[in-house]
Amino acid sequence: MERFIKSVFAILIVLVSFNAATASFISITTDIKGVAVDGNQGVSRLSVVNRGDEAAFDTSVSFHLQEGFTAEEVFIGRLDPNIPFETEIVVKTPAGALPGVYPAAASVNYRDANSYPFSAVTPFNIVNSRQTTTAIFAVLDEVSVSESRGAELKLTVKNPDPVDRNANVMLYLPRELEAEKYSKKLFLPARGNAELEFEVSSFSALPGSSYAVFAAIGFEENGMMHATFARGTITIVEEQPLVSNSALKAVLAVLVLIFLALQFRRKG
Image (tube, rainbow, N blue to C red):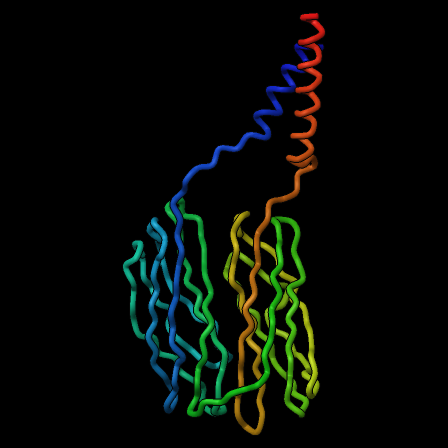
């Protein structure tokens, strides 16, 4: 019995022990100004900085644009820490595009030293001929997902104006995440709130990571386009084990007490 307790005691110590290690990391910051379109194209500045302490490899920037809008992908290659990459981007608009504000997003895609892919999404606006504003605002939830369990990401939109509106909602996610649908229609009642949900899950995200995600709410009114963004967070969590670490510690404590009792009994 004593030998068995010693063996279990040793195994449990290994299971509940954790040695923290300092690891290198990559942290991408993207700055992109709103694109002002005159005629059928607009130019803006793009800046990408790696705020981590490890180089990012095969770095590129792709764009999520409304139908008919185009912009060339930007290839950066190796992005060393704290050395900004800056360039101009050119966005072209389709013929007949209404004046106003259109939502868009830039996705910085890269790999770490182990060739594992990562990405980060940043929203921006495209202003075609004329700037518009909107009093509509929205809130995007924070949710947690694991490798096998997704979540419902809820968007709440408030329309404080005295008119009903029909809006288009677009969800922007990094490549490590995916959604059942990325765009949905939403009716916004006058002076009221509306909600919808996106079913999101992990595609290749690592546990412990947190991702900024964005939803764009756009609508047409009086021949003009209007848009606003909501920001949310998706956190990737570990799969829950069958036996929790707390339970293992409780069993370990009981076995320690039993072991000590046997020792005192043998000495007595």
